[in-house]
Every structure is written in structure tokens, then in C-alpha cells.
Image 1 (cartoon, one colour):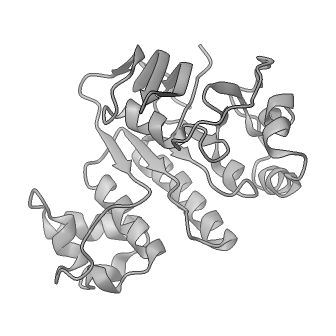
Image 2 (tube, rainbow, N blue to C red):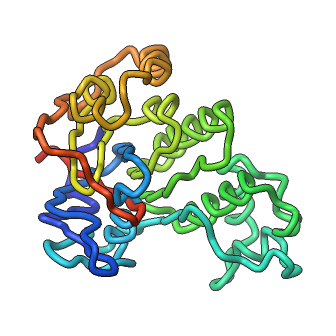
Image 3 (cartoon, rainbow, N blue to C red):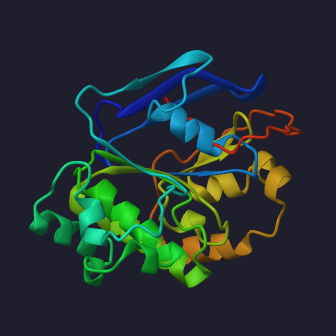
Length: 266
């Protein structure tokens, strides 16, 4: 993994929504070229954290710094679009700023949707729409991709295929990827680093280290053998950030917002 100035960095980040503390004391850093996956139960603050990182949600405490000039592509869980609008995929990707047809075709091909340019948005499945949003993010040639549960609604094979796509994009473009994971049985397969979030950073490190951490097991139990088996099958090398951190925190949170959180090794 390439080293360099952090693309996104948070220090002591806290967020309150509706008078409720959703995130607190979160430190995070995303290095160029790395893939970081955030996992956590529903209501753990995953989406809120991602939105705070890109500047869509203001922090209540702490600070977020983005590298000057860095391009960040964001893919939300859902995008409110009137599906009855007569608009093709290619036209949608060319809004609000016109894009060269060749660039749109290349982005769709990279997202595995080369044949969809002429299709109506209303005809797309949920999974296809997520890939179109992914292609839209790629059009900006981002330094970092921030993806909020990009595989939501896909079956396990579809998820595994998408994570392979993520690795290919990282390899081809050299961009960093920060994503919220959904299915624990496949989420670890592509990550250099996994962050376990429940209002704060419970533990982080290489996938195998995190999966063995007491905090992770307290949240998800011991039934994660599928994730470990897939990870061991696809990765026979060691990753950086290999230490799972043991903070010994209580995890009895009841945060209502679902948002991302992540903390990076200094």
C-alpha cells in the first residue's frame, strides 16, 4: 500500500443528531490506496460517520480534515430519484455537468454495467442502480471512494463479485476505498483494514485480528467462520495495520442513527 499524506483524517470526532450522541471520540485516517471496511450493528453510527467525513454532516466536536485538492467520490445507500422520469442511464451520468460519451461508457464498463447506458433508470434493479451510482462516482477519477453499504440488496455471490470489483478499481485507479460493510460473511474479503464501530471505535486492524478481538465478538458473536474462511482463501499474505486494538469499552449503545465510523492506526 502506498504511503503518503492522509486523504481524510478525523480527530476526536463527535456527532450529535436530534440531541442524541451518535459518535464520540473517533480518530480516523485514510491513507492513499488502502481499502478500509467499517462494520457495526444497526444504529452504530456508520452512515453518520461517512457523511461527516465528506462534509455532509457537521461535527459537534473534534475536526475532519480532507487533503487539499483530493477528489472524493461518494456512493450513498440510496438516492431519491423519481423512477417515473424518462431518463436514461447515460443521461443521468451526464448530469449536472455534461460528460463525454466515452467517459460515461468507460465508467459503466469499469462498474460492470457496460450495456446499461441506453436503459431507463426506471427499469433498473436495486443492484443495478447501485452500480450506476458507483460508475457516477468513478467519473470524477477519485482519489478516494466512500461507499455506504454498496452491496445492500445483493446476495452473497453478488457481494463477493462487487468486492472483487472494488479490488480491481483500486488496482487500476490507485484510489483509496472506505466502505460500510453489510454481510459479515464476505465483507472482510477485500479489506486491508477493518474497523468495528459502535458509536466509537471498538477495535480495528487486519481482518483476522479484528475478528478475534473481544469487542468484535461481543457485538457479532462467534458465528463469523464464513468471513474468516473466505478471507483465508483469498488472502495468503499479511496486511499492514495488523493489530486489533483492545479498548475494553462497554458496547451497550442505543444510537438511533446508522452511520460510518472509522479510526486508523497512527
